[in-house]
Length: 217
Ligand SMILES: Cc1cc2nc3c(=O)[nH]c(=O)nc-3n(C[C@H](O)[C@H](O)[C@H](O)COP(=O)(O)O)c2cc1C
Image (tube, rainbow, N blue to C red; front, side):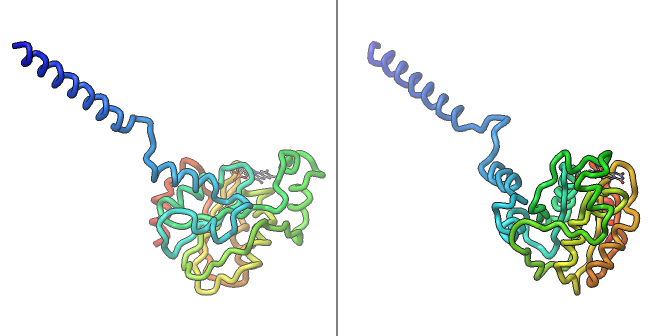
């Protein structure tokens, strides 16, 4: 009798230990899988000037022949670019200015701010940070930017003038406070001098990006 109750106690103890272990190994609702957090780390890193352009472009997502290139001073275009990259399973690459735009630089009320001066002179070509990206192998290139004074930021002209888009389809997109894409897409096409450029689109956080991407096919 004594031995039997001892055995019951040991069995209960073993079951309790097993329960604790199995609960501890279960993932918690808010926890991220290692692959999730890996992707997030890479996304945070993407576009930083410390990484080479190639590393950045190959940073995440499934490799295919589509790439989303974007410049974003305050994050709006970046958000849209990430959605396009997610929908198209494309690589993503941030165009980072060698000299970052400060809040003062972005002040459109100041006629002497850096952006006002740059946008008033269509020959200005702000420098881009990092190594030159290779566009070899990409057939479709989305290219995004904010509208500044109704046009593309001059750094976008620096970018398109540095690449050969021959044999590629180029799709401009922009974000803005309300203005349309205007002549920015055709300005870029003219300055690039190569590639098959589609008509661009103004997009926002709430745009139907999947629908827009589908409409291009
Ligand atoms: C210097 C400057 C000029 C701008 N000019 C315009 C403009 O002409 N029309 C417009 O609708 N929005 C204009 N905006 C607003 C931006 O286009 C808008 O906030 C954009 O989504 C910012 O994108 P980003 O966060 O990727 O930099 C301007 C913003 C700045 C900083």
